[in-house]
Each structure stands twice: as C-alpha cells, then as structure tokens.
Length: 83
Image 1 (cartoon, rainbow, N blue to C red):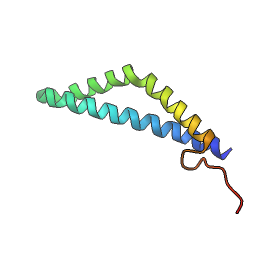
Image 2 (image 1 turned 180 degrees about the vertical axis):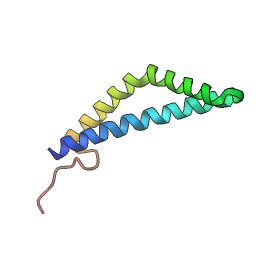
Image 3 (image 1 turned 60 degrees about the horizontal axis):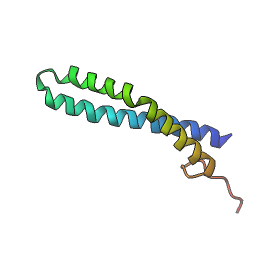
Image 4 (image 1 turned 45 degrees about the vertical axis):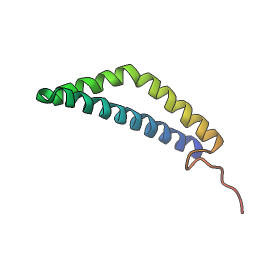
C-alpha cells in the first residue's frame, strides 16, 4: 500500500514539474520576443505548450512512476528489508 501511495505522489510530482518547467521555458522565450506584451505572450505560449505536450507528459510520468514504483527505483518505493 505504501508503494502505491508513493507511486501516486511521484506521478503528480513528475507531471507537474515537467509541465511547469516546459511552460516556464516557452513562456520566458515568448516574453523575450514580445517585450511590450510579455505577460500575455508568455501565458499564450505556456497554454499552447500544455495543450500540445500535456498528454505526452502525463503518459510519460505515469509510466515512470509505475515502473519506478514496481522496481523500487524511486525514493520511498524500495521494499523494506529486515536486518
């Protein structure tokens, strides 16, 4: 049950981190290109990134969290070994 809980936490953490990092990068670049209207340009670019790559990011995070939890590769998912 502990592995399942940590797997869910890792799924949300990985997906949100990837979406925020990607949105930040494209939003920052769009803001630099249109300095007069940087906030609107960055917001539009970030939304476009999320719509284009959101599904791929969520699927990748799901696979990484599932496989990492099953094999104990992610922190908190390693099986407890009796000393």
